[in-house]
Image 1 (cartoon, rainbow, N blue to C red):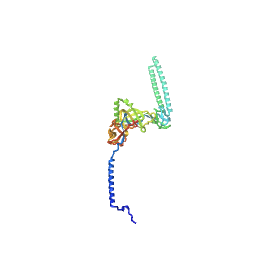
Image 2 (image 1 turned 180 degrees about the vertical axis):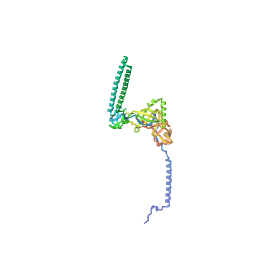
Image 3 (image 1 turned 60 degrees about the horizontal axis):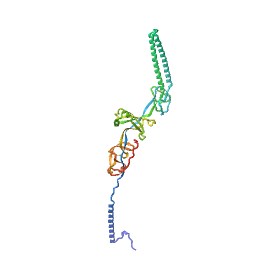
Image 4 (image 1 turned 135 degrees about the vertical axis):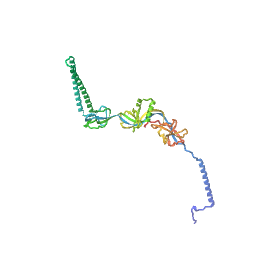
Length: 400
């Protein structure tokens, strides 16, 4: 029986090995030729330019505003005090409620002052009677002296008595008025429409003993003031705009203002300028300005921190682009535009106020520039793009 060996141990004849080696070389040469042919046919083709959305800037009229921050303040606030001494008899309102002008809020022991008024009135009536008697006596003595029945000295004495009675009457009348005023002070009235704070004293407590005692505070909410400061540069801008439009100081006081709270969108509260300080504060370089607004629904409370804007002038044909199309670097703000050769360029711009979602461009952009508004990451300055024309939506009402 012949032994068997694995194939790798079988020795082939020389001719067979030579034929196999030649076949391998021919296969390798054939593969190389095919590879070279394939490389010549599949040459590199660059990708198409990336697509980006472009649009022309929006052209429209805008209103230039002066913006500031301020605080609301009551147009009137008064501390209610006891102007006469006595025991607090009653509190005639609920703490924190709205009251009308003339409403009785506190009553302070009125009976004592009523009696004093009646006493003064009685004294005044007695003084009137004395004057009447003195006047009649003077007339009688004057008649007798003409007939030489009495001397001139008697007439002079009657005249003096009449004058003294007249002075006493005047004094009695003054005392009556003082008593009436004090009696009126026993009822503490609301001096204007407003909201009264919590009472600071209790019924039965002695008030006004040594000095006026504060009973509560009343605050008027409608209308309401808004105080804010304007820096020196803005003051110069306002004065220049007023001079250009021919406005007087009286016209400026009628300038409308708009106010918005921190939680509100836009400036829903409308009013007008009411006062401007005649001088700038040298320490802060600002001018104190005040506006006045109706506040019938009492949405604005004194002390609120508010946003304020004042319209200065109208600008025609302003250029606006989406705020998201703006970029920033160390040199400032810029936009990407596509030129006539569809190559992206970077433009430095000077920006203005925000109008809704659009930003006003003050300088650096022309009306026929195609601005990249979408696909900004694909728009590289100096490279070509495939611009897709779009239309910018008109701006919504500004919320800033």
